[in-house]
Length: 151
Image 1 (tube, rainbow, N blue to C red):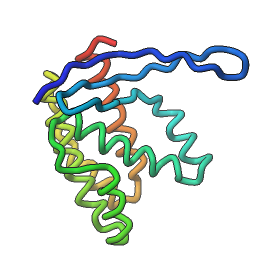
Image 2: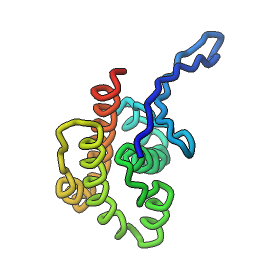
Image 3: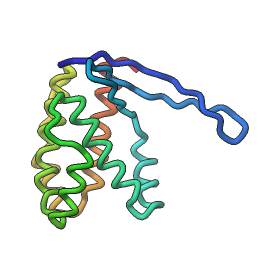
């Protein structure tokens, strides 16, 4: 099931001026899935400033966006986070490997050269460097948006 991709620019009033937000949407028969291009540096800063709360949101978002881009809806971000909490972090190792496979499928589906970083994400998870994995995944999502959809 392949949807078409659309770029939408939203003007939002902020501090007496209008700020432009860009939202990327994949339109499917059953609904709309929003994929957001994020600045990786700002995501890291927000994660540090919020003591990890933005990191949780980011984890859930990149899981959902990677699943949507790959067409493999076997993993949702909310469920992945819940299972990580319930299993005291053990599920996160499975997630690290699985998200690498999902991103490989997403790159292949987008017509790009697929990079299977599953083992790299697993090693980073063991080394407690999951934020690096999130950065690489977000970079891959941004590349799919840039290269395949021309935005």
